[in-house]
Image 1 (cartoon, rainbow, N blue to C red):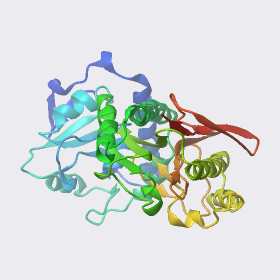
Image 2 (cartoon, rainbow, N blue to C red):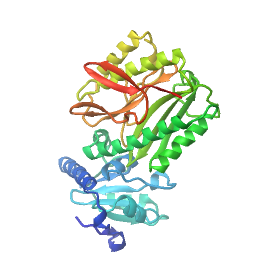
Image 3 (spheres, rainbow, N blue to C red):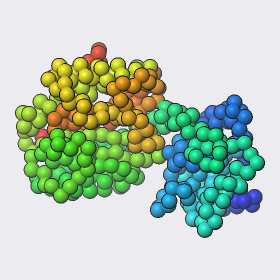
Image 4 (cartoon, rainbow, N blue to C red):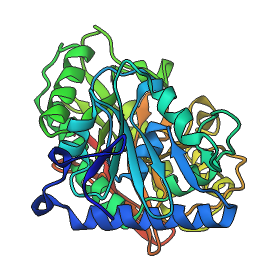
Length: 387
């Protein structure tokens, strides 16, 4: 497969990647995904696949993302045939994509001048061809669900990227908590978390800081100008390599209040039940039943109604919400953010489902732990940092 970019039929050696910088693991991951798409095309009798959804672009390229302000309908896209893979990008984006995102990944380029609009190029590609697309376009058949199912199951390369990202997100949240001072505002703490994420190349997708029990009233929240007097819950979702990882931690000035400590410990028990049940082929509905039994045992039987217990993460910060009536079976490679709450307390970790069972990606860096034994497993979950 040629490494020279082709621009509307012309070669541009300036876009040829420097082979010395190729990441062989990422290249192998992209090649394997191309093989899977090629098999789909053969089975369906399609000549090619248009990929327009940025999450699917990140999946197929194993990490490439657009930068800068760009409307959805002008985002870089992909055109995949059984033998070739093409990036569709405007002239404002193409050079950076190949220099920073796609160096040596085997992609060719079809470029449009920014004022021509992407739609013109897409229509010319689709003319008189049997193509599929991952978004509604013309009358092309959809490959959206096929891509979504495979996108949720992270490959070994993607799991390794998530482990590196988890270290970045955990450090950002824990370091901010170790350094915050009484009466700093939620906004100031959020800014410290975002700063630490950005310094290490991760994008702060979502940050929540809840001071002094505000999380009991607002199970979904962000951050405000409220000062932190006694304690707070800090959670963050970071993006890097086109992937997402989330984590939550609780910090207290001095000894935690007994009610807060009890609620947090009980939330850890529920979290342990969710993690321990996250095995391949486990039915989501049955995992919820295990968690609800713990809610009942700790006298918090209604708490699970107030907010979702978990999500599937991946190329999207929320690939899928996990519902208590779902009959879907967990798959190897699913990455889950379990974050049960009880009263003001939230305990949240990112977990990957492997053939050997669940693995916590967001293990503590320098933080007190709570030991919980459940279903033959002993888990070290984050306790409350008392400063």
